[in-house]
Image 1 (cartoon, helix red, strand yellow):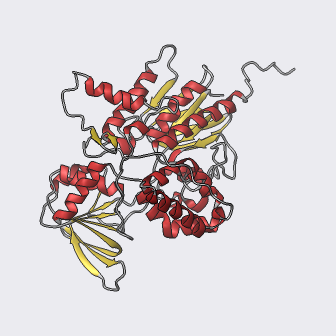
Image 2: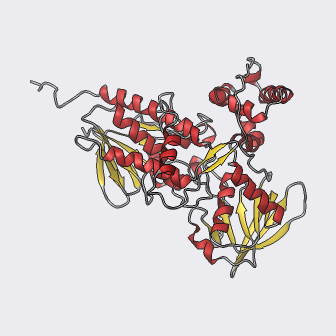
Image 3: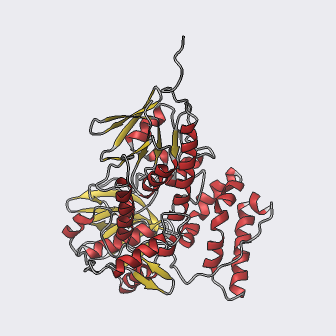
Length: 465
């Protein structure tokens, strides 16, 4: 049997899983880290080189290691003091904290992987620069197959593919990829660009458009037209107490949290302190609500929660505010009814929220910034094949995969497959941010190590008479 655990995806989730697995697995086991993108340790989120694409968490919260909370902020300080660094790093220090460019965080993660590759002793981390297209059940585990035709026998695998992209806006040949901004330099200022979504991805898309020379008007559209709130100086607020009745009703739970915010305001404190105080129990609150109440949250309250929970760095929020004030960025609430492609433009028919009047808007490009897709919307060939074989299945509300409390993926056929990060969405709620994923990685590594140590060692088994 192969003594290899594969990790599919080498963004933050996969990189953290690899580092923790190397520490937790027996020394005669190795890790196969597979990445379809151009670099390891970065993924989409941290592969950007734009200095205006800032982390939406303070640097002090971004350490890769739960037991070393200052690891990233100290790395940043050493980098800033390094005389070999001649160019601007783009680190912003604000009253709300220090915020670093996401590209710098990708560099930090890549350095951690490089250090693991160069560790003393026999190499236990192997990198596969290819897309994983299949995991075929085989004796002792799986045969991992890649798009380039490679086959690797593995005993088990951790699915760490990060955010799944959804179908986004209706199809158009004028669609632009917000993560491939090279095409933005060909845009002309005479026609606007439409961004579908008004969250943090939209903030980055506006920065990319401006950074690549587009000076025209930008229209950002979402169902409610909500913008992310901005970070402010933080203070500790005590964890609110919740009665059993609060956990049985979304209405009561919302009323209880609003009462806590009102109490904070009376004390001269900020609503952000209350939301931050909920972080340790958010998953508990999510799992405690009945399924029907969680579905109500997804239909009605999720956008409001997201703009309060996932906040923008102050300098990013200021840039968006300046764009709106100048009239170069318009944020609308509404939905797309149709897109008609024409030569050099697409005519998008919108229905503004609260009106019965449709509006036709010609745009030269459409960027999808709607965020996370659902499992059944994904075109990922690996997930499709695993689903068809019964090795995985969609989890609650089809937001992620069905998993057990041990992070093991559940399907019609049991196997040694684990997951972490965004693929936990639905079973968990706080599973997207760095503090959540680094803890998951440590827990997954310990569970995988326990599972492989329980596998009989056939190399030492006595011969049968």
